[in-house]
Image (cartoon, rainbow, N blue to C red):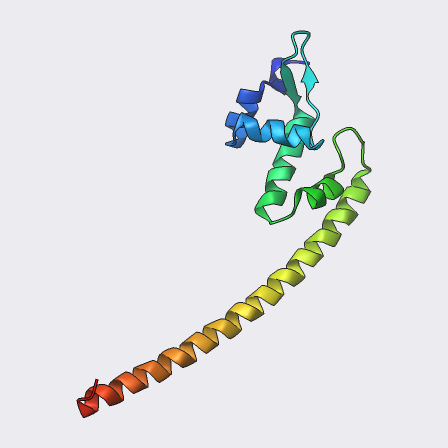
Length: 133
């Protein structure tokens, strides 16, 4: 493996702008499985880096680690790419439905707040017009 195909934990952490502790956490959860040098140091491959990017993207989208593990498979299992895509689509569609529901809830809340705001502005105008406060 050439030096361009592997990284130390600190190099990978720098590339991904995360802590080495985070990388070790994902390793403990079985999501990545770095190789080890004879001295026991972790060596991360392109596959590990790609998996870390998928994990971080999944976290950014609000997926749980269990959901991410189902989408990308555990590190020690070679999951079929078609299965990965099907599982990711399933979770993506679920997330889109959740977002649509949240948008509806936010729109309803916004309308309620605007209605209350208008009532308070009208009442304030009445109070200021009559001199009673």
